[in-house]
Length: 474
Image (cartoon, rainbow, N blue to C red; front, side, top):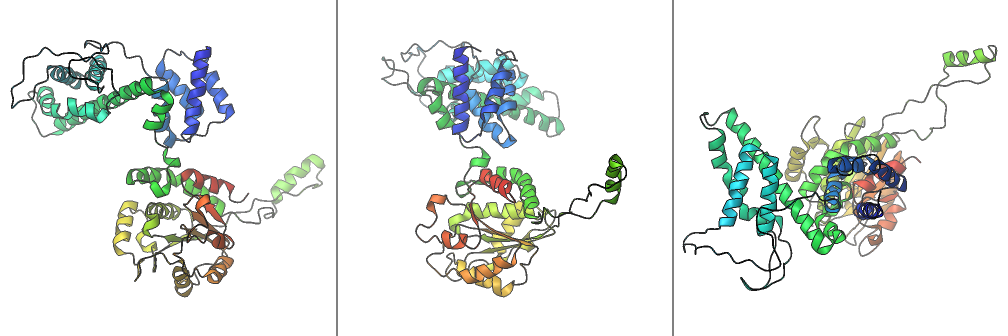
């Protein structure tokens, strides 16, 4: 490996770490060794080798691919259009009619793109991408036709709007389905094929613009501007609906791990029942004298889980996550009961029907759950007291209690004695807080008081939830 390639690799790994991918020194060395064992000229081999050694979870793969494309861009060759030489070119074209929009360069690119969409020829795709970026990918400065400096790269959206690939659909369908009856399976397949090719064109244009931005501003700035955290690093309080959809796919294995740790018997050092056969078998090596006894492993006891969720607007995205978590945990415990509150308390378990869709459940919950009272402001004290009055027998010695909320009480009563009594009856009691630890105990936060009763854990994203599950029982 050359010094230049090694420097690029070190910079690439540093960029992964800055964007939240945890890469150990051992994994970094494994990646370097893998690079020595492949054909570096084969970009797909390089991508696969680095992904196999540096990416731990599938959720991190999109971020890895984006950073890889910036640090190891493909060789694109030359465009069929005249190269840009630093001067805004004059187009000696006939004036367009006042009521029409004509652009011969755009039309030529659209013709090239139409050929690709009809045939699927990869060379036509590469040419259409290069021409689109060369023609529309740069915002030039200076007066039209006068000297100017090449400006910053346009956004991919501006380029795609110029080319408008979707408007070619009707013509391509007519060409592909010539002589075939429309409206049937053939048309559906043709539409799917063309849409897939349009997406490939759009993805390639976006990758090309990322490369141009990297050339203009440097790879570090390009990665910072183009990449966003992987799904396990996205803060719950800032999560969009798209982020939560990804969280939903990633939460099941975490729920299984969390359930296994919460269900562990605290007497793990205690022996199980005597395994007579294993003891006798082992005694054969000592002349039939049982020098040591063997015991069966203790069977883990499934516990009940009670989840108490803050559903106020201040933690709306986190509230949706907590409901996803409760929904995922319902299959891991013998019984799950979920309760939500703002300034009223309502049991949410009825919305979590076995085999039901979580999106439908959350839609029904938002419309039907009675969690908001007269004030509409978070009231931990009232919620805790209502829970103790209505559901005092829910928490017992086989119960794990999980409280999820930001511990901000609007300077109201927080019912600490009641919470202490409830938590004291449970097998486990934990509090997951979506705020940064530095924000705890500021303003109306009562995190310190609650932490003294139920251990409070910072849980801002899936990575911290995974770490919480990992540390349980240690």
